[in-house]
Image (cartoon, rainbow, N blue to C red; front, side):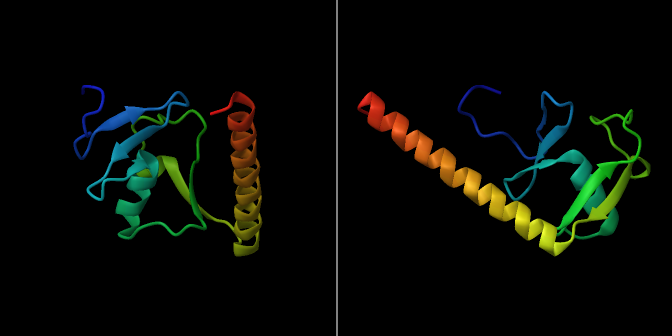
Length: 105
C-alpha cells in the first residue's frame, strides 16, 4: 500500500509489540484479539472490558478464542485511569505549546 492511500477493510498491520491491528468496516483500527472476542460474544466490547491472553506464549498474530479471556475492570478503576490519561494529555499539550513558543513556531 502506497503512502497516503486509504487502507482497505481487513488490512492487518503487525505492531512492534507483536499484536496485530485490523481495519474494520467502520473505518477503525482494532486489535485482532479484541475482534476475536467481539465475534465470539456477538457484541462490541464495553470500555471497561479487557481481552487478555491466557498463555503469554500464545500467538498474538493469530489468536483463537481458546487463547483469550475477558476481564472486567471496575468502573471506579476505569474512571481513575481516564482521569490520569486526561491529566497526562493536558500536560503533553502544554509541553507542545511551550516547545512551539520556544522555537517561535
